Amino acid sequence: MEYFISDNIAKINCLIGTEIKKLISEKPNAVLGFATGSTPLGAYKELINLYKKSEIDFSEVITFNLDEYVGLEQTDPNSYRYFMDYNLFNHINIPKKNTHVPNGCAADLQHECIEYENMIKKAGGVDLQILGIGHNGHIGFNEPGTPFNSITHVVDLDERTRKANSRFFSTVDEVPGRAISMGIKTIMMSRKIILIVFGEDKADIIKEALTGKITEQVPASVLQLHPNVSVYMDDKAASKL
Ligand code: F6R
Image (cartoon, rainbow, N blue to C red; front, side, top):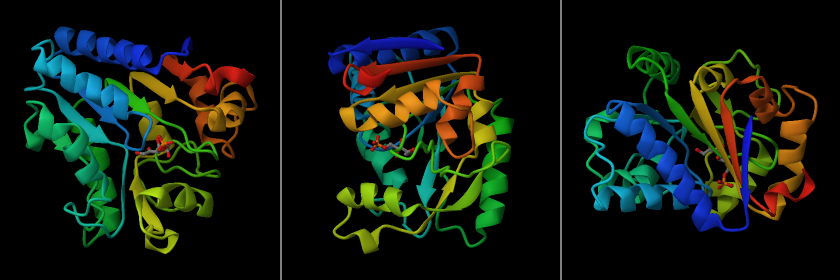
């Protein structure tokens, strides 16, 4: 596991952008795995900057997002499809058909999960997966207790996760109780993982995940078993390591 720690978040986002740029220049049809949430927003801005400076061409890139709420239409500003379009895809030259986010409004959610997993396989697997981490150690929407051998599945969201995410909704009751998420095994099959962690409030969980026991109770602890993980952290998140 490689660590990049800095008190300069702009510099961290720049390094992440450079790593993605390098991958796409070597493999123009790279398969990228994306996360939503606050953490990767700066990195996505950096990708937009690099595109505007003609330093990255996304025309052949394929993307798969980690997760999506069940029951939110793609046009709902709180859906993860909307988030990705608004914060990244609408600003770069990626064909929309190359971008994949699970359909949380599918009539048959189980079928959607199987199809999503198959689409990732058909694309050749994820070359580089971006991850954030939740306060309870979740990655994607894989909450504590999720089996390490899980593939894309429907999950019941933890109350802490719904509360944390309620900052984007008017009330916590509006936060959907279920989501579709890539499983832990799906994430672990990515050839490279970039885990981004910012803020003092993540210091305890990141210490537990990266240096504690590898256990399904701390989903991100599984990353200790992955051969190719880079962790990009600010000094506050790294303060307890
Ligand atoms: C979202 C996702 C989640 C977030 C995590 C951290 O697609 O996969 O696991 O990465 O909840 O969220 P933020 O970045 O908002 O702290």
